[in-house]
Length: 181
Image (cartoon, rainbow, N blue to C red; front, side, top):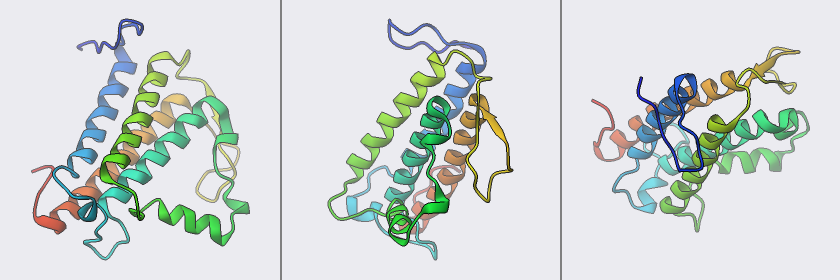
């Protein structure tokens, strides 16, 4: 296993933490790669029956990663309380999946890079990957369940990989370009 090194102020990362950083970097690369050479307009185009567009997928993954990283540190208070959401809240959530007027692909990618950098710092500096937080009450979580930081990070890897696959289909439908294969 090759160690991953960071800045002079960050220690060398090895083992499980290095593996997590490599997995996150790989899936983030595939997602970002689907947006290569696109205009802002193309990044906002829907090319399938889905409501998804490439810029919106990057925005969504950025939001998801930010929320889960905050959850590792802050616990359930970092998670939205879906039980109290209004129609306006759900509309704002839906905007996360599209490019809105005034948004640029460069801006969306820069926000993603900032969140990724913060998550990577968390992977590197978190005292204990076994530290757990209780999950919020939601229909998609088992009641009275806790997730470790490790499990949250694995969830972020899986979510990013899933959306990178969605992005690959959207990009191929847009102009025939493929990210993989």
